[in-house]
Image (cartoon, rainbow, N blue to C red; front, side, top):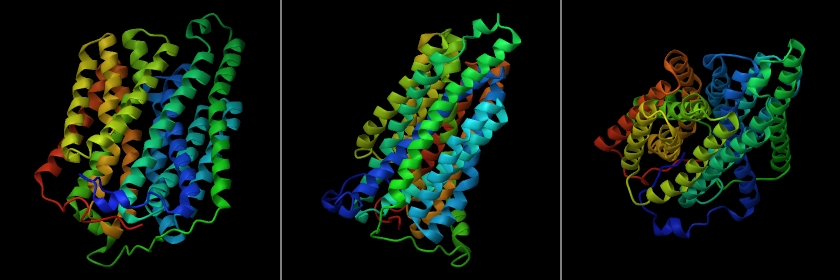
Length: 440
């Protein structure tokens, strides 16, 4: 949510990272960042799992992502109103509570053996995480001196890929190895198939109940701890001042195009990770267990690259680095389409290196100079996560019609559009980074 600096000033280095009395609440928020990363990337594993359990097409199984990211889109603006009216702590608690409820809804879903019920549970979970993410970013910024806000937010965001890796690991260890093999289903009776379905859905249930339990614990720890922020959220005027907040945001091309770029960035990320397992199975011929570890490798590359890119952002202009990595990711997509062997799978995994810097970099470029309008501007960037709901269905349709390798044309095009935003930023003058800061 904060701008991405090109260099670190003396004041920023001297500023305390977190206000002393807010260090424990800050650690609790780090757990929140990890929790929504864990839930989001466990969802990537579920696409292939549901395809096997319910015997569906790629398009039908991609509705998992539609339910998840669609909820993000719908709840971002309500989250912004909660933060403006009741404060960041209230927003975080509402988000945690709703997400925990969604996790526990997996219990009746597994008993009903209904795909639609699983989609509902995922929607409620993601609705809570949308409110949590929209609240947690500005909450972190408000937890200390303004001069150290960028460093503080970057640290918090680093825990998101940590959680993402844990989510995929849970899928690879707790779900994939324990599923009924597809070859075994061919010789089962109808009663045996039903029992196998029940057993497989129980494997899906366990990690989500665990995540929900963790969210409840975090909720309790935050709810009963006083948090006096150095800066409190202010009410946002949506109607006056040149047409109001929404009109000013729409008139800002860097913000408007940034939301579009974020839409396609999240789309490319979701497409890449959602179908990595299916690419490994359908193109390279790996087993489901082995394919899950390739997705794990993608997330590990993303995690390591996030720290590397954070360091490089202190050397290179963010838009330049964004352009280079977007083009790199597009080249990897092209390789995966035409090199149909282990090299193509490596290219799919390598896309994560390019994706690693995109979300926070686009976030910073789009919000730079917005001032108090950044409160609702951040909600717009969270709503852009809708790209993760819509575009994977396009890739799934391409895969159903032309094969798993051809589907990677979709994230390739998305990354080229992100590169276009980087070119726009490089070719248009804007205030120097650091001249405008985001008010908490």
